[in-house]
Image 1 (tube, rainbow, N blue to C red):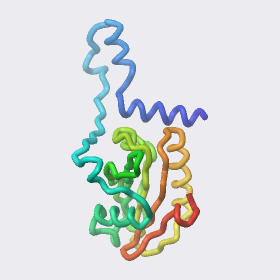
Image 2 (cartoon, one colour; image 1 turned 90 degrees about the vertical axis):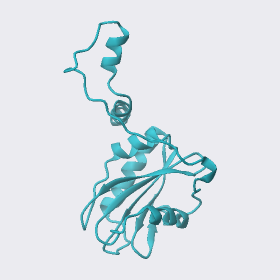
Image 3 (cartoon, helix red, strand yellow; image 1 turned 60 degrees about the vertical axis):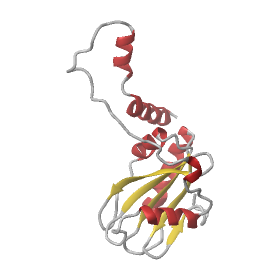
Image 4 (tube, one colour; image 1 turned 45 degrees about the vertical axis):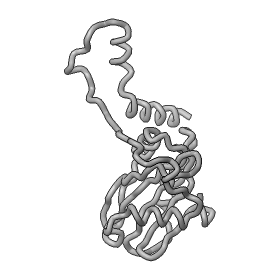
Length: 180
């Protein structure tokens, strides 16, 4: 339970800055020396498309169609990790290209996934990465990462709906295969 509290605290600090400076200002202790002030962290999200015009996710096939439209041409060259942010009606709020890796792997930082999901007010996410090798089988590290992301989402009340592994021709859905 302590890890969950630390995770929530870190996400809140990422989104809203430190509480120390705000508290000093509220108490009227004067201006804080600029050298002591930490840099402001910004995660920007803006909605430019009306809700009724955003695609709605109803199946893994629909998710794959949306992901392929957003994916780079390097799907067979290097691994990339993406996150779809969804609203209460499973309409796509947007996507986040979390990382670009190498031929055999990429990094997915759970804190960055949920920092952006909180900023976009997402109630659910779908994570996805590609396998340039064409192998659809999830690795053990894919399964562990999925479980950890799902657990972190439960703490923040953001559902993980699926984890999609893409290749150039086909895909693997954790949800469709009962692995979620």
